[in-house]
Image 1 (cartoon, rainbow, N blue to C red):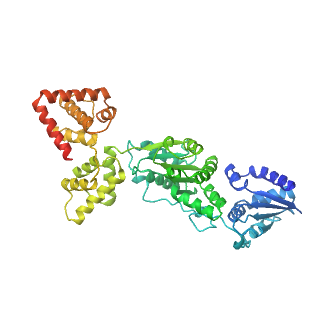
Image 2 (image 1 turned 135 degrees about the vertical axis):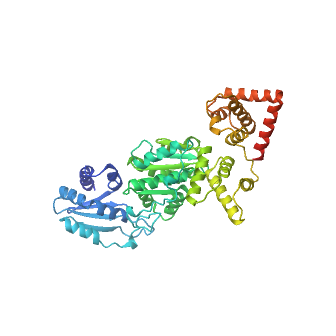
Image 3 (image 1 turned 90 degrees about the horizontal axis):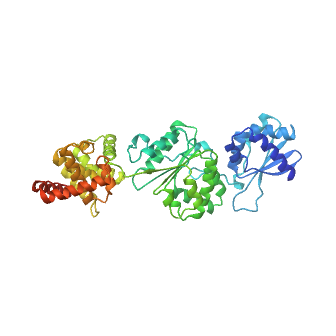
Length: 476
Protein backbone atom coordinates (compact mmCIF):
# COMPACT_ATOMS: atom_id res chain seq x y z
CA UNK A 1 0.00 0.00 0.00
CA UNK A 2 2.84 2.39 0.84
CA UNK A 3 4.57 1.61 -2.47
CA UNK A 4 1.31 2.21 -4.33
CA UNK A 5 0.78 5.53 -2.55
CA UNK A 6 4.34 6.69 -3.22
CA UNK A 7 4.11 5.72 -6.90
CA UNK A 8 0.75 7.48 -7.29
CA UNK A 9 2.13 10.60 -5.58
CA UNK A 10 4.96 10.63 -8.11
CA UNK A 11 2.41 10.25 -10.89
CA UNK A 12 0.32 13.08 -9.47
CA UNK A 13 3.28 15.46 -9.43
CA UNK A 14 3.65 14.88 -13.19
CA UNK A 15 -0.09 15.05 -13.89
CA UNK A 16 -0.45 18.29 -11.94
CA UNK A 17 1.91 20.03 -14.35
CA UNK A 18 -0.13 18.92 -17.35
CA UNK A 19 -3.73 19.72 -16.39
CA UNK A 20 -5.55 22.75 -15.03
CA UNK A 21 -5.93 23.07 -11.24
CA UNK A 22 -9.67 22.61 -11.60
CA UNK A 23 -9.33 19.40 -13.62
CA UNK A 24 -6.70 18.07 -11.22
CA UNK A 25 -8.93 18.67 -8.20
CA UNK A 26 -12.04 17.25 -9.85
CA UNK A 27 -10.67 14.19 -11.63
CA UNK A 28 -7.41 13.14 -9.93
CA UNK A 29 -7.58 14.05 -6.25
CA UNK A 30 -10.57 11.66 -5.62
CA UNK A 31 -8.60 8.71 -7.05
CA UNK A 32 -7.09 6.40 -4.38
CA UNK A 33 -4.21 3.97 -4.97
CA UNK A 34 -5.14 0.47 -3.80
CA UNK A 35 -2.09 -1.72 -4.49
CA UNK A 36 1.04 -2.12 -6.61
CA UNK A 37 1.94 -5.66 -7.67
CA UNK A 38 4.00 -7.00 -10.59
CA UNK A 39 4.15 -3.57 -12.24
CA UNK A 40 0.33 -3.29 -12.05
CA UNK A 41 -0.98 -0.21 -10.25
CA UNK A 42 -4.58 -0.51 -9.03
CA UNK A 43 -6.51 2.73 -8.61
CA UNK A 44 -9.91 3.11 -6.98
CA UNK A 45 -12.34 5.58 -8.60
CA UNK A 46 -15.67 6.74 -7.12
CA UNK A 47 -18.04 5.58 -9.86
CA UNK A 48 -18.50 4.12 -13.32
CA UNK A 49 -19.09 7.60 -14.73
CA UNK A 50 -15.85 8.82 -13.16
CA UNK A 51 -13.90 5.97 -14.74
CA UNK A 52 -15.37 6.64 -18.20
CA UNK A 53 -14.62 10.35 -18.01
CA UNK A 54 -10.99 9.85 -16.93
CA UNK A 55 -10.39 7.23 -19.60
CA UNK A 56 -11.93 9.32 -22.34
CA UNK A 57 -10.12 12.56 -21.55
CA UNK A 58 -6.86 11.59 -19.81
CA UNK A 59 -5.89 8.14 -21.11
CA UNK A 60 -2.78 9.44 -22.93
CA UNK A 61 -1.56 11.36 -19.91
CA UNK A 62 -2.08 8.35 -17.64
CA UNK A 63 -0.29 6.06 -20.09
CA UNK A 64 2.78 8.27 -20.32
CA UNK A 65 2.89 8.86 -16.57
CA UNK A 66 2.62 5.15 -15.67
CA UNK A 67 5.25 4.22 -18.26
CA UNK A 68 7.56 6.89 -16.90
CA UNK A 69 7.31 5.47 -13.38
CA UNK A 70 7.00 1.69 -14.07
CA UNK A 71 8.62 1.32 -17.47
CA UNK A 72 7.05 0.14 -20.76
CA UNK A 73 5.64 -3.01 -19.10
CA UNK A 74 3.53 -1.04 -16.63
CA UNK A 75 -0.17 -1.81 -16.35
CA UNK A 76 -3.12 -0.04 -14.78
CA UNK A 77 -6.23 -1.38 -13.08
CA UNK A 78 -9.31 0.52 -12.03
CA UNK A 79 -11.35 -0.62 -9.07
CA UNK A 80 -14.76 1.01 -9.41
CA UNK A 81 -16.51 1.54 -6.08
CA UNK A 82 -19.81 -0.29 -5.89
CA UNK A 83 -22.27 2.18 -4.40
CA UNK A 84 -25.47 0.19 -3.84
CA UNK A 85 -27.18 -2.01 -1.31
CA UNK A 86 -25.54 -5.29 -2.40
CA UNK A 87 -22.61 -5.20 -0.03
CA UNK A 88 -21.64 -8.84 -0.70
CA UNK A 89 -20.54 -8.06 -4.28
CA UNK A 90 -16.87 -7.59 -5.10
CA UNK A 91 -15.58 -4.36 -6.67
CA UNK A 92 -15.51 -4.58 -10.42
CA UNK A 93 -11.96 -4.39 -11.80
CA UNK A 94 -10.88 -3.27 -15.24
CA UNK A 95 -7.38 -4.10 -16.52
CA UNK A 96 -5.82 -1.90 -19.16
CA UNK A 97 -2.44 -2.71 -20.73
CA UNK A 98 -0.47 0.48 -21.33
CA UNK A 99 2.19 -0.88 -23.67
CA UNK A 100 1.03 0.96 -26.75
CA UNK A 101 -1.28 3.85 -27.55
CA UNK A 102 -3.65 1.95 -29.83
CA UNK A 103 -4.30 -0.93 -27.46
CA UNK A 104 -5.10 1.42 -24.61
CA UNK A 105 -7.50 3.52 -26.64
CA UNK A 106 -9.33 0.52 -28.05
CA UNK A 107 -9.49 -1.35 -24.78
CA UNK A 108 -10.95 1.69 -23.06
CA UNK A 109 -13.70 2.01 -25.66
CA UNK A 110 -14.55 -1.68 -25.98
CA UNK A 111 -14.36 -2.52 -22.27
CA UNK A 112 -17.31 -4.73 -21.20
CA UNK A 113 -19.08 -3.28 -18.16
CA UNK A 114 -21.46 -5.30 -16.00
CA UNK A 115 -24.05 -2.68 -15.06
CA UNK A 116 -25.64 -5.02 -12.55
CA UNK A 117 -22.59 -4.56 -10.39
CA UNK A 118 -22.28 -0.79 -10.88
CA UNK A 119 -24.28 2.30 -10.04
CA UNK A 120 -23.41 4.92 -12.69
CA UNK A 121 -23.47 8.56 -11.69
CA UNK A 122 -27.05 9.74 -11.49
CA UNK A 123 -27.58 12.91 -13.45
CA UNK A 124 -30.59 14.44 -11.67
CA UNK A 125 -31.88 15.88 -14.95
CA UNK A 126 -31.13 13.13 -17.48
CA UNK A 127 -31.09 9.34 -17.49
CA UNK A 128 -27.84 8.22 -15.76
CA UNK A 129 -24.57 7.50 -17.49
CA UNK A 130 -24.22 10.50 -19.81
CA UNK A 131 -21.38 12.85 -20.55
CA UNK A 132 -21.16 16.39 -19.25
CA UNK A 133 -21.84 17.93 -22.65
CA UNK A 134 -25.32 16.40 -22.68
CA UNK A 135 -26.49 18.31 -19.62
CA UNK A 136 -29.63 20.31 -20.43
CA UNK A 137 -29.32 23.87 -19.12
CA UNK A 138 -33.01 23.94 -18.03
CA UNK A 139 -33.16 27.62 -19.10
CA UNK A 140 -36.41 29.21 -20.21
CA UNK A 141 -35.86 30.74 -23.69
CA UNK A 142 -38.69 33.23 -23.11
CA UNK A 143 -36.59 34.96 -20.47
CA UNK A 144 -34.08 36.46 -22.90
CA UNK A 145 -32.13 39.58 -21.97
CA UNK A 146 -33.87 41.48 -24.79
CA UNK A 147 -37.19 41.02 -22.97
CA UNK A 148 -35.84 42.39 -19.69
CA UNK A 149 -36.68 46.11 -19.50
CA UNK A 150 -33.91 48.17 -17.89
CA UNK A 151 -34.67 51.02 -15.50
CA UNK A 152 -33.25 52.75 -12.46
CA UNK A 153 -34.87 50.03 -10.34
CA UNK A 154 -32.75 47.22 -11.81
CA UNK A 155 -29.78 48.83 -13.57
CA UNK A 156 -27.12 47.54 -11.15
CA UNK A 157 -28.32 43.93 -11.30
CA UNK A 158 -28.70 44.01 -15.09
CA UNK A 159 -25.24 45.54 -15.61
CA UNK A 160 -23.66 42.98 -13.30
CA UNK A 161 -25.50 40.24 -15.21
CA UNK A 162 -24.02 41.52 -18.47
CA UNK A 163 -20.52 41.46 -16.99
CA UNK A 164 -21.00 37.89 -15.74
CA UNK A 165 -22.41 36.77 -19.11
CA UNK A 166 -19.36 38.13 -20.93
CA UNK A 167 -16.83 36.67 -18.51
CA UNK A 168 -18.36 33.96 -16.30
CA UNK A 169 -16.17 33.19 -13.30
CA UNK A 170 -13.74 35.92 -14.35
CA UNK A 171 -15.24 38.93 -12.56
CA UNK A 172 -15.50 40.04 -8.95
CA UNK A 173 -19.23 39.23 -9.14
CA UNK A 174 -18.90 35.61 -8.03
CA UNK A 175 -21.30 34.73 -6.64
CA UNK A 176 -23.81 37.17 -8.12
CA UNK A 177 -26.80 37.25 -5.77
CA UNK A 178 -29.91 38.97 -7.15
CA UNK A 179 -32.56 39.76 -4.56
CA UNK A 180 -35.92 41.49 -4.51
CA UNK A 181 -39.62 41.04 -3.85
CA UNK A 182 -42.14 38.91 -5.69
CA UNK A 183 -42.65 39.62 -9.38
CA UNK A 184 -39.72 42.00 -9.88
CA UNK A 185 -37.83 39.85 -12.42
CA UNK A 186 -35.29 37.78 -10.44
CA UNK A 187 -36.03 34.55 -12.29
CA UNK A 188 -36.14 36.39 -15.63
CA UNK A 189 -32.73 38.00 -15.11
CA UNK A 190 -31.14 34.77 -13.82
CA UNK A 191 -32.34 32.89 -16.91
CA UNK A 192 -31.24 35.76 -19.17
CA UNK A 193 -27.71 35.58 -17.75
CA UNK A 194 -27.59 31.84 -18.43
CA UNK A 195 -28.88 32.27 -21.99
CA UNK A 196 -26.27 34.95 -22.73
CA UNK A 197 -23.49 32.75 -21.36
CA UNK A 198 -24.61 29.91 -23.62
CA UNK A 199 -24.46 32.30 -26.58
CA UNK A 200 -21.08 33.80 -25.68
CA UNK A 201 -19.46 30.60 -24.38
CA UNK A 202 -21.09 27.58 -26.06
CA UNK A 203 -18.57 25.19 -24.48
CA UNK A 204 -19.59 26.17 -20.95
CA UNK A 205 -21.98 23.87 -19.13
CA UNK A 206 -24.77 26.06 -17.73
CA UNK A 207 -27.44 24.75 -15.38
CA UNK A 208 -30.49 26.54 -13.94
CA UNK A 209 -32.24 24.83 -11.04
CA UNK A 210 -34.71 25.96 -8.39
CA UNK A 211 -33.72 25.45 -4.77
CA UNK A 212 -36.78 23.22 -4.34
CA UNK A 213 -35.71 20.89 -7.16
CA UNK A 214 -32.12 20.83 -5.85
CA UNK A 215 -33.43 19.81 -2.43
CA UNK A 216 -35.64 17.02 -3.83
CA UNK A 217 -32.74 15.67 -5.91
CA UNK A 218 -30.53 15.59 -2.83
CA UNK A 219 -33.21 13.76 -0.84
CA UNK A 220 -33.53 11.19 -3.64
CA UNK A 221 -29.75 10.70 -3.68
CA UNK A 222 -29.81 10.01 0.07
CA UNK A 223 -32.61 7.46 -0.36
CA UNK A 224 -30.76 5.76 -3.23
CA UNK A 225 -27.35 6.00 -1.55
CA UNK A 226 -25.95 7.99 -4.48
CA UNK A 227 -24.83 11.20 -2.72
CA UNK A 228 -21.36 11.00 -4.27
CA UNK A 229 -22.82 10.91 -7.77
CA UNK A 230 -25.11 13.83 -6.93
CA UNK A 231 -22.15 15.90 -5.72
CA UNK A 232 -19.92 14.94 -8.65
CA UNK A 233 -22.63 15.93 -11.10
CA UNK A 234 -22.97 19.43 -9.67
CA UNK A 235 -19.19 19.83 -9.36
CA UNK A 236 -18.91 19.45 -13.15
CA UNK A 237 -21.06 22.53 -13.87
CA UNK A 238 -19.33 25.66 -15.20
CA UNK A 239 -22.19 28.06 -14.44
CA UNK A 240 -24.66 27.10 -11.71
CA UNK A 241 -27.82 29.20 -11.29
CA UNK A 242 -29.85 28.51 -8.14
CA UNK A 243 -33.25 30.24 -7.92
CA UNK A 244 -34.82 31.19 -4.56
CA UNK A 245 -32.01 30.11 -2.22
CA UNK A 246 -34.08 31.33 0.74
CA UNK A 247 -35.92 27.99 0.57
CA UNK A 248 -32.74 26.28 1.82
CA UNK A 249 -33.54 27.84 5.22
CA UNK A 250 -33.91 25.24 7.96
CA UNK A 251 -32.67 22.38 5.73
CA UNK A 252 -29.34 21.64 7.39
CA UNK A 253 -28.29 18.65 5.27
CA UNK A 254 -29.16 20.42 2.01
CA UNK A 255 -27.23 23.51 3.13
CA UNK A 256 -24.26 21.32 4.03
CA UNK A 257 -24.06 19.61 0.63
CA UNK A 258 -24.61 22.93 -1.17
CA UNK A 259 -21.82 24.46 0.92
CA UNK A 260 -19.34 21.86 -0.36
CA UNK A 261 -20.56 22.18 -3.96
CA UNK A 262 -20.34 25.98 -3.68
CA UNK A 263 -16.78 25.78 -2.36
CA UNK A 264 -15.65 23.43 -5.11
CA UNK A 265 -17.16 25.49 -7.91
CA UNK A 266 -15.92 28.81 -6.56
CA UNK A 267 -12.38 27.57 -5.97
CA UNK A 268 -12.24 26.21 -9.51
CA UNK A 269 -13.42 29.39 -11.18
CA UNK A 270 -17.00 28.34 -11.96
CA UNK A 271 -19.66 31.05 -11.89
CA UNK A 272 -22.49 30.99 -9.36
CA UNK A 273 -25.67 33.03 -9.81
CA UNK A 274 -28.19 33.01 -6.95
CA UNK A 275 -31.57 34.65 -6.42
CA UNK A 276 -33.34 35.39 -3.17
CA UNK A 277 -36.26 37.42 -1.87
CA UNK A 278 -34.02 39.10 0.71
CA UNK A 279 -30.38 40.25 1.01
CA UNK A 280 -28.00 37.84 2.78
CA UNK A 281 -28.08 39.79 6.05
CA UNK A 282 -31.85 39.24 6.31
CA UNK A 283 -31.98 35.53 5.44
CA UNK A 284 -33.14 33.52 8.43
CA UNK A 285 -32.41 29.83 9.09
CA UNK A 286 -29.22 29.78 6.99
CA UNK A 287 -25.80 28.67 8.21
CA UNK A 288 -23.40 31.55 8.79
CA UNK A 289 -20.64 29.90 6.75
CA UNK A 290 -23.02 29.82 3.76
CA UNK A 291 -24.20 33.39 4.27
CA UNK A 292 -20.60 34.60 4.43
CA UNK A 293 -19.95 33.01 1.03
CA UNK A 294 -23.03 34.68 -0.44
CA UNK A 295 -21.34 37.98 0.47
CA UNK A 296 -18.08 37.18 -1.37
CA UNK A 297 -19.31 38.58 -4.66
CA UNK A 298 -22.01 41.14 -5.42
CA UNK A 299 -25.52 41.36 -3.97
CA UNK A 300 -27.67 43.41 -6.36
CA UNK A 301 -31.26 44.32 -5.59
CA UNK A 302 -34.28 44.64 -7.84
CA UNK A 303 -36.51 47.44 -6.58
CA UNK A 304 -40.15 48.21 -7.32
CA UNK A 305 -40.26 49.63 -10.86
CA UNK A 306 -40.62 53.37 -11.36
CA UNK A 307 -43.28 54.86 -13.62
CA UNK A 308 -41.09 55.01 -16.74
CA UNK A 309 -40.08 51.37 -16.32
CA UNK A 310 -43.69 50.26 -15.83
CA UNK A 311 -44.77 52.04 -19.00
CA UNK A 312 -41.81 50.54 -20.88
CA UNK A 313 -42.75 47.04 -19.64
CA UNK A 314 -46.31 47.47 -20.90
CA UNK A 315 -45.13 48.81 -24.27
CA UNK A 316 -42.70 45.89 -24.63
CA UNK A 317 -45.44 43.38 -23.82
CA UNK A 318 -47.82 45.03 -26.29
CA UNK A 319 -45.17 44.99 -29.00
CA UNK A 320 -44.43 41.30 -28.45
CA UNK A 321 -48.13 40.40 -28.55
CA UNK A 322 -48.82 42.64 -31.54
CA UNK A 323 -51.47 44.77 -29.85
CA UNK A 324 -52.03 48.50 -29.54
CA UNK A 325 -53.72 50.31 -26.65
CA UNK A 326 -54.61 53.98 -26.19
CA UNK A 327 -51.88 55.94 -24.44
CA UNK A 328 -54.15 57.02 -21.56
CA UNK A 329 -55.07 53.36 -20.88
CA UNK A 330 -51.40 52.33 -20.76
CA UNK A 331 -50.61 55.21 -18.41
CA UNK A 332 -53.57 54.37 -16.17
CA UNK A 333 -52.38 50.77 -15.81
CA UNK A 334 -48.85 51.94 -15.05
CA UNK A 335 -50.06 54.46 -12.48
CA UNK A 336 -52.46 52.03 -10.81
CA UNK A 337 -50.22 48.98 -10.29
CA UNK A 338 -46.92 50.13 -8.87
CA UNK A 339 -45.18 47.34 -7.01
CA UNK A 340 -45.09 44.23 -9.15
CA UNK A 341 -44.18 43.60 -12.79
CA UNK A 342 -46.01 40.27 -12.79
CA UNK A 343 -49.25 41.89 -11.61
CA UNK A 344 -48.81 44.66 -14.16
CA UNK A 345 -48.54 42.19 -17.04
CA UNK A 346 -51.44 40.21 -15.56
CA UNK A 347 -53.61 43.33 -15.54
CA UNK A 348 -52.79 43.97 -19.19
CA UNK A 349 -53.74 40.39 -20.13
CA UNK A 350 -56.99 40.66 -18.13
CA UNK A 351 -57.89 43.92 -19.85
CA UNK A 352 -57.33 42.43 -23.31
CA UNK A 353 -59.33 39.32 -22.35
CA UNK A 354 -62.25 41.43 -21.07
CA UNK A 355 -62.27 43.45 -24.27
CA UNK A 356 -62.14 40.35 -26.47
CA UNK A 357 -64.69 38.21 -24.61
CA UNK A 358 -67.20 41.02 -24.10
CA UNK A 359 -66.64 42.50 -27.56
CA UNK A 360 -65.89 45.92 -26.07
CA UNK A 361 -63.31 48.40 -27.28
CA UNK A 362 -60.50 49.12 -24.84
CA UNK A 363 -61.19 52.48 -23.22
CA UNK A 364 -60.13 54.25 -20.06
CA UNK A 365 -63.51 53.44 -18.46
CA UNK A 366 -63.07 49.73 -19.18
CA UNK A 367 -59.56 49.89 -17.74
CA UNK A 368 -60.88 51.51 -14.55
CA UNK A 369 -63.58 48.84 -14.17
CA UNK A 370 -61.02 46.08 -14.71
CA UNK A 371 -58.53 47.59 -12.25
CA UNK A 372 -61.23 47.86 -9.58
CA UNK A 373 -61.89 44.12 -9.95
CA UNK A 374 -58.24 43.25 -10.31
CA UNK A 375 -57.31 44.87 -7.00
CA UNK A 376 -60.64 44.15 -5.31
CA UNK A 377 -60.53 43.76 -1.53
CA UNK A 378 -57.03 45.21 -1.37
CA UNK A 379 -56.14 48.61 0.00
CA UNK A 380 -54.54 50.14 -3.05
CA UNK A 381 -52.24 52.99 -2.09
CA UNK A 382 -52.21 55.96 -4.45
CA UNK A 383 -48.72 56.46 -5.85
CA UNK A 384 -46.71 59.69 -5.97
CA UNK A 385 -46.49 59.30 -9.73
CA UNK A 386 -50.26 59.18 -10.09
CA UNK A 387 -50.74 62.21 -7.85
CA UNK A 388 -48.27 64.14 -9.99
CA UNK A 389 -50.09 63.13 -13.17
CA UNK A 390 -53.49 64.24 -11.80
CA UNK A 391 -52.05 67.60 -10.69
CA UNK A 392 -50.29 68.17 -14.01
CA UNK A 393 -53.42 67.24 -15.97
CA UNK A 394 -55.49 69.61 -13.83
CA UNK A 395 -53.19 72.57 -14.50
CA UNK A 396 -52.39 71.44 -18.06
CA UNK A 397 -48.64 71.15 -17.38
CA UNK A 398 -46.16 68.59 -18.76
CA UNK A 399 -45.04 66.12 -16.10
CA UNK A 400 -41.38 66.74 -17.01
CA UNK A 401 -41.81 70.41 -16.09
CA UNK A 402 -42.87 69.54 -12.55
CA UNK A 403 -39.74 67.43 -12.10
CA UNK A 404 -37.47 70.11 -13.55
CA UNK A 405 -35.59 72.88 -11.69
CA UNK A 406 -37.80 75.70 -13.02
CA UNK A 407 -39.05 78.33 -10.54
CA UNK A 408 -42.02 79.57 -12.57
CA UNK A 409 -44.89 80.43 -10.24
CA UNK A 410 -47.48 78.09 -11.76
CA UNK A 411 -45.02 75.16 -11.80
CA UNK A 412 -43.89 75.79 -8.22
CA UNK A 413 -47.51 75.84 -7.05
CA UNK A 414 -48.35 72.60 -8.86
CA UNK A 415 -45.22 70.98 -7.41
CA UNK A 416 -46.19 72.09 -3.87
CA UNK A 417 -49.72 70.70 -4.29
CA UNK A 418 -48.29 67.36 -5.48
CA UNK A 419 -45.99 67.27 -2.44
CA UNK A 420 -48.93 68.07 -0.17
CA UNK A 421 -51.12 65.24 -1.48
CA UNK A 422 -48.16 62.82 -1.54
CA UNK A 423 -47.63 63.43 2.17
CA UNK A 424 -51.37 63.12 2.90
CA UNK A 425 -52.16 60.05 0.80
CA UNK A 426 -49.01 57.92 0.69
CA UNK A 427 -46.70 56.31 3.23
CA UNK A 428 -43.61 57.67 1.49
CA UNK A 429 -40.99 59.55 3.46
CA UNK A 430 -40.41 63.27 2.96
CA UNK A 431 -37.08 62.48 1.29
CA UNK A 432 -38.77 60.09 -1.15
CA UNK A 433 -41.45 62.64 -2.01
CA UNK A 434 -38.78 65.29 -2.60
CA UNK A 435 -36.79 62.93 -4.83
CA UNK A 436 -39.88 62.43 -7.02
CA UNK A 437 -40.40 66.18 -7.33
CA UNK A 438 -37.16 67.25 -8.94
CA UNK A 439 -34.68 66.10 -6.30
CA UNK A 440 -35.89 68.37 -3.46
CA UNK A 441 -34.92 67.73 0.15
CA UNK A 442 -37.27 66.99 3.05
CA UNK A 443 -37.22 70.62 4.28
CA UNK A 444 -38.59 71.76 0.91
CA UNK A 445 -41.41 69.22 1.19
CA UNK A 446 -42.31 70.45 4.69
CA UNK A 447 -42.30 74.06 3.47
CA UNK A 448 -44.57 73.09 0.55
CA UNK A 449 -47.07 71.40 2.88
CA UNK A 450 -47.18 74.44 5.18
CA UNK A 451 -47.67 76.76 2.19
CA UNK A 452 -50.58 74.69 0.84
CA UNK A 453 -52.26 74.57 4.27
CA UNK A 454 -51.96 78.36 4.60
CA UNK A 455 -53.46 78.94 1.15
CA UNK A 456 -56.34 76.55 1.90
CA UNK A 457 -57.17 78.71 4.94
CA UNK A 458 -56.84 82.09 3.17
CA UNK A 459 -57.55 81.63 -0.57
CA UNK A 460 -61.04 80.54 -1.66
CA UNK A 461 -60.01 79.87 -5.27
CA UNK A 462 -57.06 77.75 -4.09
CA UNK A 463 -59.46 75.72 -1.89
CA UNK A 464 -61.46 74.88 -5.02
CA UNK A 465 -58.23 73.65 -6.71
CA UNK A 466 -57.47 71.34 -3.80
CA UNK A 467 -61.04 70.02 -3.62
CA UNK A 468 -61.19 69.28 -7.36
CA UNK A 469 -57.81 67.56 -7.41
CA UNK A 470 -58.66 65.49 -4.33
CA UNK A 471 -61.86 64.23 -6.03
CA UNK A 472 -59.91 63.26 -9.15
CA UNK A 473 -57.32 61.39 -7.11
CA UNK A 474 -59.95 59.52 -5.08
CA UNK A 475 -61.79 58.54 -8.25
CA UNK A 476 -58.71 56.62 -9.35
